[in-house]
Amino acid sequence: MSITSSFYSGLSGLDTHAIAMQVIGDNISNVHTTGYKSSTAHFEDVLGVSLTGVTGGNQTGAGADVASVDLNFIQGSLETTGVATDVSINGKGFFAVKDPTTTELFYTRAGHFVFDNQGYYINNQGLHVQGYLYDSEGLTLLETLSDIQVDQNSMVPPKVTSNVELILNLDASEETKTWNINDPSGTSHFSTALTIFDSLGQAHQAQVYFTKTAAQSWAWNAIIDGGDVQGGTPGTFVSYGSGTIAFDNSGQLTTVMPVNFYTGALTFANGTTPPATQVDFADTTQYGSASAIQKINQDGYMAGTISGLSIDKEGNIVANYTNGTLKKIAMLALADFPSLDGIARKGATLYQATTTSGEPLYNKPGVGGMGVITASMLEESNVDLAAEFIKMIVIQRGYQANTKVITTTDEMLAQLINIR
Image 1 (tube, rainbow, N blue to C red):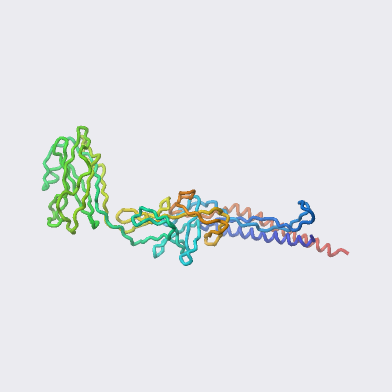
Image 2 (image 1 turned 60 degrees about the vertical axis):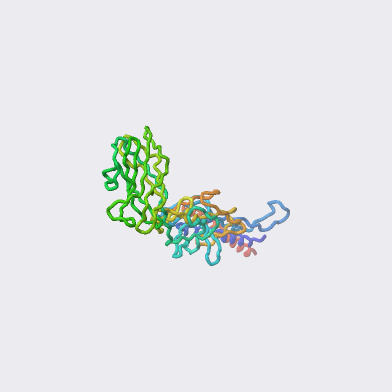
């Protein structure tokens, strides 16, 4: 091997160190890029010639080459943004996004997503975020990868009040009275308001009065204003329902629950019939202390429209409606690969599967080793500036050393030419 071969060895050293410096520069320039993963250049030697035989002493090298530029998938820090649609992955996995024009799938750790004017959940490049959709009731998850789309103008239908839970204590020390609908306050011992929703989602206000009729027996009477029913007179009371409840000597309820809440015969002013509501007084007591409500709950509600969206740690996108109800719309899907070293970098913090990486493995957040979702946060770049600066110094010195090889070889060649 001639002396001039060292020129090419030095040149290969310059090339490889230049590529390494390019990688370092790329890392530093993306120090604030959301979801960016740093890269590292790895060198390998180049065999020049095997002189004779097979022993190592008979082989000479011909410089260096870049063996690979590997991605570092160590997780970056999470930064709070306060934006409800921003998401980050705490742990393994990638978000899946699809190009709507080519249907190509890409993968990213950058979770700065928004909803476009068609309700699609998209990234900065307009790619559709992928996930699993729930059925129209928000109960059953349809485990087919799909575009996540939310109709911001959607409405949940009303629900009639079918069940009422009413728990209270009635004062055992009260004297008995006789109920009179024309004097509800004077002929009762305690009362509470209760809202009932009809089939149209319209609210009707009922007042439930409790009157002690015997030592261990109480009557309850529900009334509504006459202006709320057909044929009624505003300001007068109409019976909505009535019944009795009994207690044992320990103050525990003995009446079988639940019972019918609506026992009247009326039609609301809007033309609907009161729902067949069941009221449950279970756990109501009669102790010698002041009458008081402990729990009141009914399962009806009016129609509602979306007032906001939230995302939980399981990746569920939940719609908040104006009537106070919540409904799951979709669940974010996460992907992983048999070999992360094989995925292809596509720019804009996007990656794509290759034959080397293997087919993507999809799963739900928190399942199968996948990370969990953190909403209103983004993953920062995992670039370590201190480490990059140190690498820069080392690469710079290596580059200088290779230039020295070239200049020294040039001097040796000049001496050879000057031999007489």
